[in-house]
Amino acid sequence: MEIYVYRLKFKNRFRGLTERDGLLLRGRAGWAEVSPFWDYDDAVAATWLAAGFEAAQRGYPKHVRNVIPVNETIPAVDAHTAHRLATASTCGTFKVKIAEHPDSLAEDVARLEVVRDAQPNAKIRVDANGAWNVDTAVKHILLMEQAAGGLEYVEQPCRTVEDMAAVRRRVEVPIAADESIRLDHAIDDIKRKGAADIAIVKNQPLGGVRATLERFASYGMPVVVSSAVESSVGLRAGLALAASLPQLPHACGLATSRLFERDVTADPLVPRGGYIEIRDVVPEHSEAIDDELIERWRLRLEAMWQRAERRGLVGGRYTFMGRFV
Ligand SMILES: O=C(O)CCC(=O)c1ccccc1C(=O)O
Ligand SMILES: [Mg+2]
Image (cartoon, rainbow, N blue to C red):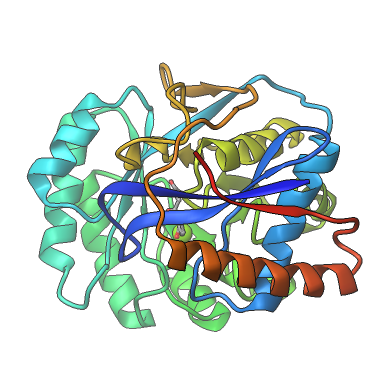
């Protein structure tokens, strides 16, 4: 297996980041991505590695559909930019990032109003990334529901399962769990406490397509497959997961390629008419990468590979090829 480092630039700041970097794996079955964020430790990163290793060596399980409905992702940008992004989109569902800083309510409301103005018939969902306490969540959700003229769901309004459950009892808008699943692996607690209506699932943090599919039956609620803002190589794995689920009642959060200035391919996985068609992706581009970043990835890969090997998630040998060109 050959492993390369890639780097891409965001058009607008996303999750506080201006760029995205990670590893591209070429295995027996094809290309795959491993791109844990830098704030994750080696134990967490090993699970992300398992997802990419499996995809590169074994490919993906059988699909039950070839096109995946997706949401447009509107980052926490100013109202003018949000309006432009929403107008340009062919998607029937919009996910609007909100609550990016403590005083963001007025900006959040304005962003939702312009998205609704640009897309009168679309479904709109919001993602608070766990920012609120229970009272703030209840208050803001009601205001945002008004601003958006209805919300499909609110993703992770509070950080803890208890608070999510409390909010869910007090608002009618459905609640989706993301960080509670992807970081805390608390699906059993979510079910026990009645904390969510929908589960957000992400391929890399959950350890790959097969591991996530196996767990799906026990979730007991609809799932939405979302990206970890990967390159099109990583998005391809998310599409494979969405394509293998027995039911897919909601649009998936996989339309994130356009958040980059330029993807790893000139033919990226972007929606047409609100759907992404599934196909393999062969990378041919990365932004320039300095030696220091290459060295950081080389060391991190060694550490996560050791961890994953001890857990029986990877095997054999790899060749670290350095920067991808
Ligand atoms: O779901 C989407 O539309 C985009 C993906 C996304 O928002 C995201 C991307 C990287 C890390 C966290 C998140 C998140 O859903 O919170
Ligand atoms: Mg989220």
